[in-house]
Length: 273
Ligand SMILES: [Fe+2]
Ligand SMILES: [Fe+2]
Image 1 (cartoon, rainbow, N blue to C red):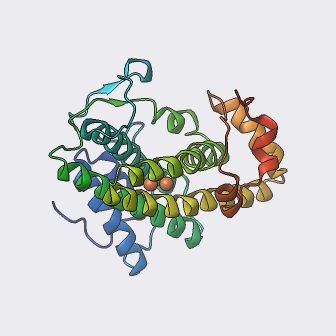
Image 2: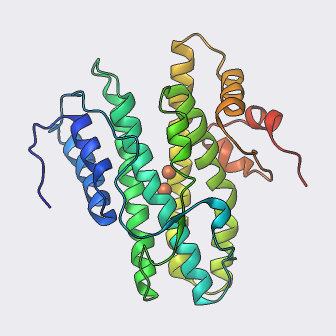
């Protein structure tokens, strides 16, 4: 892998990582961009445009969500491989989602905090992907072995025109949903005696609270800058731009920790069935 020169711009580096098809190389680039940024080696925004779709490897085969084989992550090794594979796929998408926010929406007036926050998220997503991919290897499997679903980039495409819409849907719906479902996965892995997997999921869970918090912080700032009521605007954007339900039960404690108050999502949630 060739390293781009240090004077390469923020958007050029993020776009280069987005276009990288090999998952391990993409993850390494995401971490490297963050490290270079922290060292002060990336100072210019530049004007590279991120691609409509990120680079992806030939495998996994991407299927429509409805064509995905239904598998419950059970005690069996095959069940755990399926779970790890699905999560690795989500994390690979998450690397691209964070890099896309930087490349597409970083302001050019030198507001460092935005790039700094989202590059931090991208680097953590890269580590999440690497941890899960390595755990798959422990089971003699690898990312790419199973089909994966192609619905994840849809949210990015539908919100490519507006930072506020992107923040409303990606961190504050999709990543928040991750907070709701991860504790039961951790508990299941513990019950199966798979400490290694449960510890990885613990790391992911803790850091995802931070990603939702980051989304909430920037959603609030951008809404304020535009003179909008944050809660009402979020609810409108979710109804307009997110196809799907906000499904209870919610992890209210984790969402609270991220600053996502219950009155934001309770009012537009699907009924508990
Ligand atoms: Fe993640
Ligand atoms: Fe995340």
